Amino acid sequence: MDRILLTVGLCTIGTYTILMFYKPELAHDGVESSLSMLIQAMPWMLVSMFIAGLISQVIDTKVIARFLGPQSGLSGIIIGALFGLMGTGSRWAVYPLAAGLLNAKAAPGAVFSFLTSWQLVSLPRIPAEFPFLGVPYTILRAVVSFIVSIIGGLLLEWISKIFLT
Image (cartoon, rainbow, N blue to C red; front, side):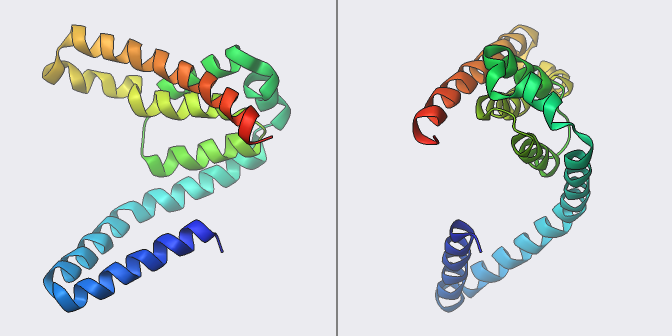
């Protein structure tokens, strides 16, 4: 079992145990809230796991390596960021996809730029910002966020070469 998962799990159980004695209503509300979120997220998690499994079988690792692999450099990071712009849907779908990209030998920086662009920009969600933040601010925020995803991808690529090799 994953050590981080085990540690977080034990801390969570420990916190609930302490709360059951000192603030039982808070522990009860926390369990109810957690179960509600689990019920809401479960369909997304199941579908995304099956999609990720299918993608891992369908995606040609040579194609991923060519466009997003370590040798792709800056262009791979930009392609990753552009791919993230198209992102819609739940995090339960995007993280397994990102894991599939990493398993298919995509460069860490390209996957970082994909995830960051998806989280910060995601073109399909931009129109929802217009009424609240205005068109000029939304466009400027999106452009800066896209640039940040590329810079972050480059930075992660550089750091990963130092610490992960």
